[in-house]
Figure 1 (tube, one colour):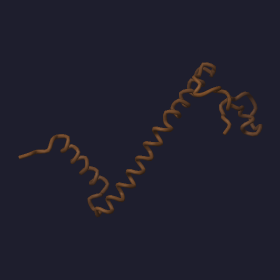
Figure 2 (tube, helix red, strand yellow; figure 1 turned 30 degrees about the horizontal axis):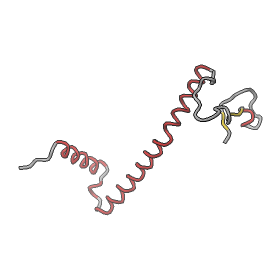
Figure 3 (tube, rainbow, N blue to C red; figure 1 turned 120 degrees about the vertical axis):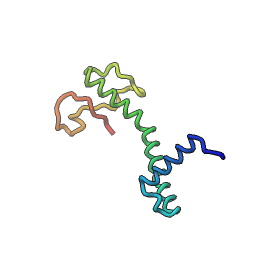
Figure 4 (cartoon, rainbow, N blue to C red; figure 1 turned 60 degrees about the vertical axis):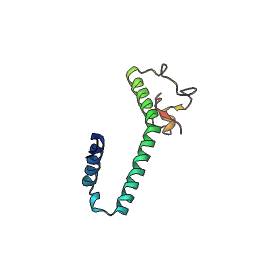
Amino acid sequence: MLYPSSLVRWLQRKRYQYEVTFSLYMLTPTEKFILNSILFLLLSLFIIAASLYLPEHILIIANRMFYYFSGDDSSLPASSGNPKAHLTTAATHFGGALAGNERAFMEP
């Protein structure tokens, strides 16, 4: 007799757990296909968005943390060109509502 390998048995068990957890075993094959397609689409969009935007977002957060701890942004790595080109004061950004030399806002 041929027995499935441990990897195949593990995959079958995971598929079974997935169907039982989300009650897919009660659906027709067409309904399963539609639901799995929607889930795959949403998961794919999430992974693409995370891979495109998360590294830059982490870099921005790390730069802000460095600025908050050191108080000096002169040694921050520039992503491209002049890093202070788009910086503006908070007073200008909020139409003069705030006074001071805050440098934490970027123009759109």
